[in-house]
Length: 124
Image (cartoon, rainbow, N blue to C red; front, side):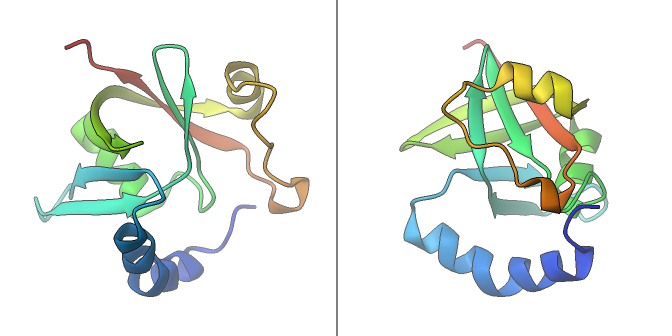
């Protein structure tokens, strides 16, 4: 089972603002599915063929994941540039690990992470 959602709420309010301000993490900009507000979430984003893969530390029920799935798109700021992403889809461990380069560390088995989010780059 992924990390509990209540820990994600603490992370969202305490640690995420610091991570965004620090500028070292990729930041996903997405729109709230009910509020319509714009949110920025620092995440681990791994480049894969024609897109990016995100490790769902809190599972697919996380607000940011649900927002992206509902909107069908998001913007990622990574390495000082913005990229448009679309076609979000949940993928399993097998597909995710096949897509990741061998240099990327896999999540510890202890966390039992089995869901990942994959998004495609929008040609532009």
